[in-house]
Length: 250
Image 1 (tube, helix red, strand yellow):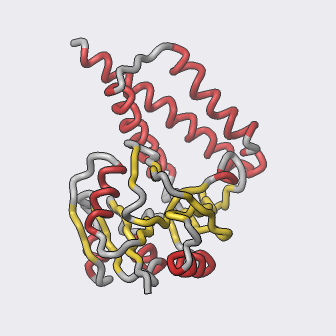
Image 2 (tube, one colour):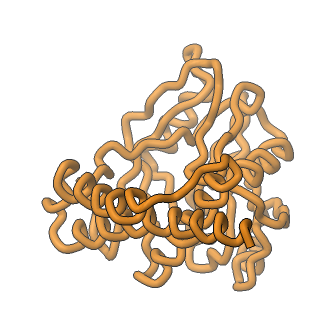
């Protein structure tokens, strides 16, 4: 019988970690790869009989690829700590690893919850990620919003997992700051520059895309706040890039 290793990357996820582990209890091995948490994440994980790897964070792809190489089994299921595998998706996962039908990985769609509301629009209606894949065929690439790269075929699950990315407004803004800093650093290393277009036009344009073009207004006020935070994330990455370019000249 084909076996599965579930991998959960963490950093200060004491609120989520127990439920995340429980939602992948069907896996034959569970690895928590932790970026040196300072809360009770590891204390809780240790009580759940999982393998724990402590590793200083450098970027999302490197962190996940490291854990993948430590996995015992051929199929990998990656679960962010704020995600939950539903019973319907669990059934699809178990069926897929026994009969992959030529696919080396599978996309899963996510139901995104923001400020207590299921966000159905603003781009979330198209939210999908590769979560189940063959270790020997796939790897992650990208500093932030990393993606699976493979030469094989990727399939789709019919059902959705749940995504609880929002703990509080301050938490979500700190996440946008973290992603923005990583993306800004990536742009700096690629030699990119900043002009007024990036600061004055791109963030409002991102808001328009999420709120109007992708119908975020249909989610009410939470949809408006979600669109604003996405625009803020764009602003943050270019401010970070501007600061890095400025510092490099001094």
